[in-house]
Amino acid sequence: MWGDRARSSLQGRRFGDVRWTAETGSTNSDLLELARGGAADGVVLVADHQRAGRGRMDRRWEAPAGSSLLVSILFRPDLEPDHLHLLTTALALAARHACQAVASVGVDLKWPNDLVVEGTGKVAGILAESVVTGDRVDAVVVGIGLNVNWPAEVPDEVAGIAVALNHLAGHEVDREDLLIAMLASLDGLCADLGTAGGRAALMTRYRDACATIGRRVRVELAHDERFVGRATQIDDDGRLVVETDVAGTSGQRLVAVGDVVHLRHT
Ligand code: BT5
Image (cartoon, rainbow, N blue to C red; front, side, top):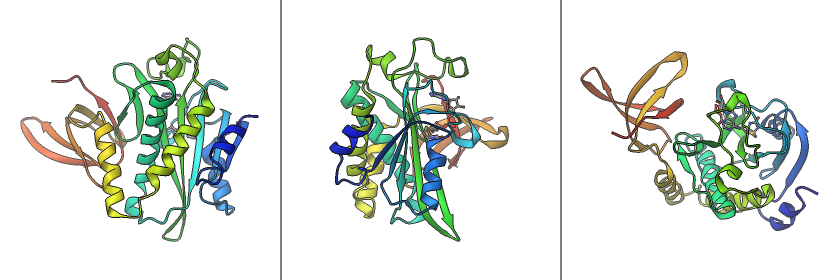
């Protein structure tokens, strides 16, 4: 049965409670519901198919049934609100590690949390959502959709955008092996987030893996606001630092939420 191998490999570890279902609306929605009902830190929900997979900002997440790793992870973090974004960062790095270790596919991170192959497409995206009571964050659910074994013909909705590991590796990739590698890595990456040194180490790894730093980018914000500049850094709060070049003047902008498009190297 799907999930058996993951449960036995990860038994006794933080992310060992793996619950694998054939079909649902959205694993993030389901896990948020479980979190509100008191589910414990470390629960992992996996689905073969989502009828209503969600991206950030109410966008849709498309995936042909059985083709992808659609996973949500429940954290009950003992972290300051300013440090919660590191859970997403850790998952991005863990997924990148799994792609390399299991499929021998090297992927870059694109700010904020996409796994991409430059010039080819997006392999995975991450959505983090919180359960908040008053001014306290009770739980954070971080979900990832990783394209694994897709048909050669990518669905119209994401044609020219999405690419899958089997396209890149040239063969099918075992979804459960990927899940196990990702969750084991995530466990290690999250272990020291309670210390300043652990947080700094994670950000260093993220900066090293992030292809956005040093690139010319177009930043797309809500309300159709866009600007172009050079991404120079990611600060400790996870914000993208962009040196803008608007009409001969220059300045710096810090982007907390938005999309970036990598422009050609100059
Ligand atoms: C994301 O949003 O990249 C976050 C995606 C998170 C999906 C997971 S699946 C498990 C869990 N349960 C959920 O309901 N969601 C999470 P964003 O950065 O907004 O990107 C969304 C955009 O990516 C869409 O507007 C499409 O352009 C594109 N897209 C949709 N499906 C894709 C896919 N399978 N691969 C690559 N790109 C895709």
